Amino acid sequence: MQDILPAQKAIHRKIEESARAVLAAYGYQEVGLPVLEQTNLFKRLVGENTDIVEKEMYTFDDRNGDSLTLRPEGTAGCARFGEENGLLFNQVQRLWYIGPMFRYERPQKGRYRQFDQIGAECFGMAGPDIDAELLLMNARLWRDLGLMDDITLELNSIGMPGSRAAYKDKLVSYLEQYRDDLDEDSQRRLTTNPMRILDSKSEKTRAILVDAPCISDFLDDESRQHFESLCQMLDDNGLAYKVNPNIVRGLDYYNRTVFEWITDTLGAQGTVCGGGRYDGLVEQMGGRGSPGVGFAMGLDRLALMLAEKMESSGTADVYVVSQGAEARRAAMQVAEEVRTGVRGLRVMVHCGDGKFKAQLKKADASGARLALVLGEEEVANASIGVKMLRESGDQITCSRDKLVSYCRDYFHEGE
Ligand code: ATP
Ligand code: MG
Image 1 (cartoon, rainbow, N blue to C red):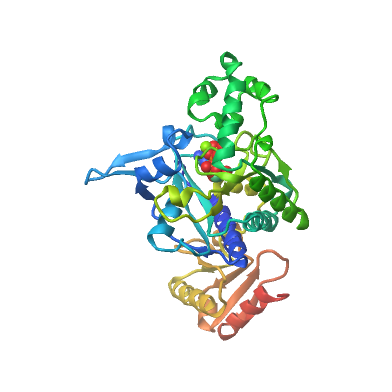
Image 2: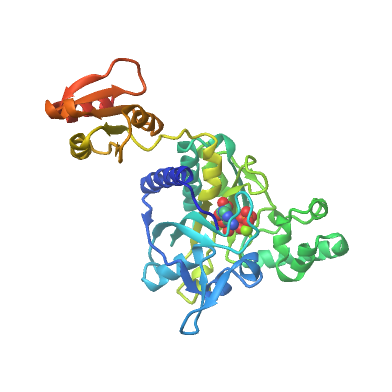
């Protein structure tokens, strides 16, 4: 599990703020979900034969002997939440959440045992329009973050359970011919979760898959129509995508639309967001049926992409330096006045002693644009020295009662 350092956290925050704004622009409502759920929820909904349930869950018995699991993903919990709070049957919901997920995996760049996701889940809408909306919303976020050039959309339809079963049989009989040449994982999946083989990263297996039967030849008419309409709406809005029949997603609950947003800037961990439709999920949970569709994006991977592009904005806009006991007390008050007077301005007070020169070095390192300087003289005549740190010019003197309006003008000019 990673420790997230301040610079990294600032990037997470930026992604969160951008996502928050985009989600609001589409009318999505944020919800708070617990990080622990009953183990059975994931076993039943995510599926016994998925990577997640087979080998990635953090599961333990609580004091009561109930088996609980740190959530490995958010969809199952969100569906449980919707059902228990009576938000699903005969209703339309656009929900989203942010928070940590936990999976016991081999840690590497872009793959951690605790990682943050932003997820959205929509209930009560069966048509392709909501699928299109989700994807357009994703694209808007990538654009806002300046990442659109590095992320591409791959899209597929896996049909309904019936058509998928027919496909599964054909796929298995095709792959059986090459059983011995498949990688070990894929050999095992031949009986447990054959469609997941399409996801295999093994070169040998990939070569065998080239001539495998294709799911698009097995789609039922309604699913085909659904997918065509979705593609049409993406075309209407100028969103580029690639249809990739090998995208199946690992979890049991998906049907029809499945998609991944992929980058080649992160090596093997190239999927930054994935999702799809899960019309059977609520019923499988024991609720009255409600179609659903959603996505989850990995903040840690997006942050790795952004880290290359984002400049640090430092920790302060204004840095207050002082010398002498009285000035030190005045500095604390001046900082409070400026924070009160200019909303959102980041004001940092130098705490402790030190020569002005050393303090100003700290001011510079903080990224601040202004240093406010207080010595005995300034205290005596109720003034402040103001030093521009990012432009040339001499230090000026400002009377204390004008300081707030000076700062306001200085930082808000041109807005
Ligand atoms: P992968 O194929 O990389 O294992 P996945 O299919 O298991 O991904 P999802 O369950 O679709 O991933 O999760 C959605 C997103 O969450 C992923 O696209 C990725 O950005 C992020 N994610 C998943 N697992 C991890 C992890 N262990 N560490 C960091 N981010 C992750
Ligand atoms: Mg995974």
